[in-house]
Length: 139
Image 1 (cartoon, rainbow, N blue to C red):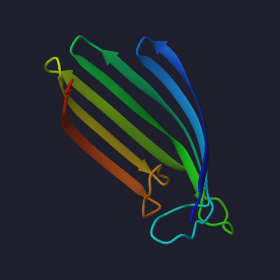
Image 2 (image 1 turned 30 degrees about the horizontal axis):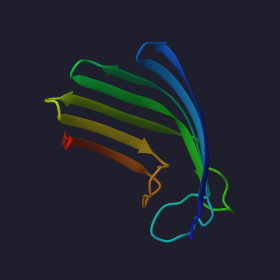
Image 3 (image 1 turned 90 degrees about the vertical axis):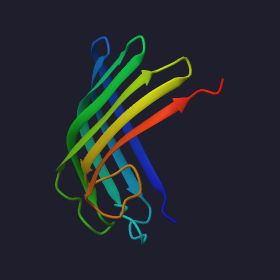
């Protein structure tokens, strides 16, 4: 049993229509950082700044979210919290409406950090993916 508790606070400011500057703070605690099978730090802190862009056109939507900041973590209750280290993130989406009920989506994301928001097995998390899909409405 390993309970995960977290607090996140953030703010975004619209610069121009479709473009926002963002900032956020996140703190996460695990009740049992020694749980076998995956990396669960006792305490993790992340602060980052970034920007979000979203634009809709007649037949397409483009969205992009990128940011970077710093993070640190404490492995176990008896350990001291580590030094601040860089953290980077990126997510993007392009969606095309190719008919009344069909949409093609291409999504890309990448992370380079010490702390993840998913279950991982190591304290250094590098991740990148590109996904293409066809969405068909049945109604």
